[in-house]
Amino acid sequence: MPASPRISLADVARASGTALGNFDSASVARALGGFAGTGLGGDAHPTVADISECLFFSPGDGRIWLQDQRMVLLHTEALGSLRREMIDTLGQEQARGLFTRAGYVSGARDAQLVRKQWPDADPLAAAIAGTRLHALEGVVKVELVQASYDADTGNYVGEFLWHNASEDDEHIAAYGIGGSPACWMQVGYATGYVSTLLGHLVVFRETQCRSMGDPHCRVIGKSAELWDGVEEDMRYLNAREFVDTAAYARPAPRAADLPQADAQQAGEAMVGASSAFNAACHQLSRVARTSATVLFTGESGVGKEKFASMLHKISPRKDQPFVAVNCAAIPDTLIESELFGVERGAYTGASQSRPGRFERANGGTLFLDEIGTLSFVAQGKLLRALQEGEIERVGGTRSIAVDVRVVAATNEALRQAVRDGTFREDLFFRLNVFPIHLPPLRERRDDIPLLMNHFLTHYRRKHGCQVGGFSQAAVRALLNYDFPGNIRELQNLIERAVIMADANGLIDLHHLFTSGETLAADVMTLRLQGDSGTLNLTAPPLEQTGMRASLEPTSATAAPTSLAQMERDTLERAISASKGNLSAAARLLHTTRAKLAFRAKKHGLV
Image 1: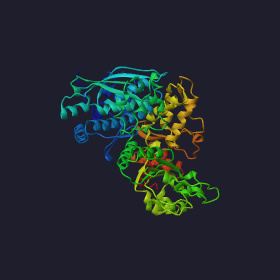
Image 2 (image 1 turned 45 degrees about the vertical axis):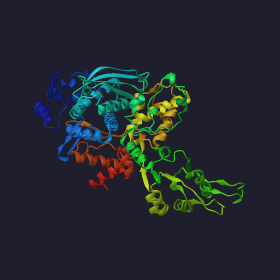
Image 3 (image 1 turned 120 degrees about the vertical axis):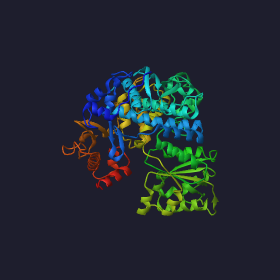
Image 4 (image 1 turned 90 degrees about the horizontal axis):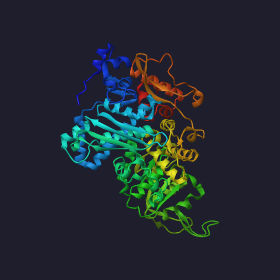
């Protein structure tokens, strides 16, 4: 296969006669000649010329942008060196999983770029567009063999040849020809890209590889339910072995009534592949083997109880009781008797003695949810039980020793509560031995397609509804929704949609958002306006969002003169629209409050 000519941005600038960074589509296409349509179907978006409009270099401050995603140029030898060290240190199986998950995140990001920039593209054309992005990023040249997508069933099948794979070059240089495929990151990329784009799990397998002595790499992708033994593929996408692989695979119709499928209970699986989810899993596995007190923090609905339950299941106490207590659901007058038990005759109505939650969890784990709602008196009694390792029943005269691992959770800022005087400082430090923060769903959007597939599979089985899948409009809406209720809200939305959708039909917007949810279209995009690229915040009409201040740029800010000015103007509009609330502004810009506060302080806005 003849090598394609190398083309630099300077070459394009000279050929088009324009200044570096001020290209238009026509000039780029002329400079690139026939490369833009080579072997990938000239009608599929984005073409190389299309993508060039999304590619921005900012040499002065060391940043490269592809749409709203920051990119880096990295030596393949550096990546190969990292790959060798990870294989030699962790073993091939563990290293393969890490690189597959990293590739998944990259593919998911590129799929979001394509969906934002070309929202009305045909699903198959948008899926093939990932081949152009992968080639532009210098990873591999992709040759399409065949691809098909059935919008009615949601089934996808694709076959591709990979040429000049950078992963193969580094793997062969380090280990020579072997007996297994080595394009781990590229397989993860393809899985993340197509799964995110179509809204259900599509698994790619490498059937031929240059690292095995084949002339080129051949990869086949299918919807998960079309593969046999998909659990083996999912081992490399899961953060830890305790993450349930069955959550990703839709069972074949004949296997739906098997005992193990029916016995799977709702919510047993921990589903995710994002870096935030993996980090939480890593912390969980480190602390599980100990008896240390764990404090889960995060917004309501992020899965704190699921993580607490999994902590118990992988700990040495797994064969002992796991007792969960919602502190907010117990009145202050009853909290002591619920936690520590009561002796017969202790008060009117106490006709018999009964143990409290501490005694019932003896030897196991006690999970105290919404710990921040306890009264000051209850906090003091809980502190004594934690310090002494013994409790005393209400109306009792003797102390009872208990061996309990306490796991607490809160959606409040306990440090602030300590400063405000509503939470005991000594109890806070007793609980805050090993804190684990669980980020909200809007900060781990890579997990949304996996969670969608998991909940769809579960509720189709639970309610006996044969729903075909999600429409493209529903996928776009869910990926851009803010999820104030986090995973719990996503779970409820999909259960509602499964019930409302027609048999064998697709879940659409009118099945999902029927209870007053606010759909916001405020996403960060990079667009060409005239001869310059600008960062824009596209917002829905004010009457839809209820915001009084417009986020659209005014005529005075429509064409900033620098990237720093663009950033400042965008931050200023978001903070103004949020009436100075930095957390709300961060949600508008799909970033974290800490990042927004840092940048706003840099520009003198706060």
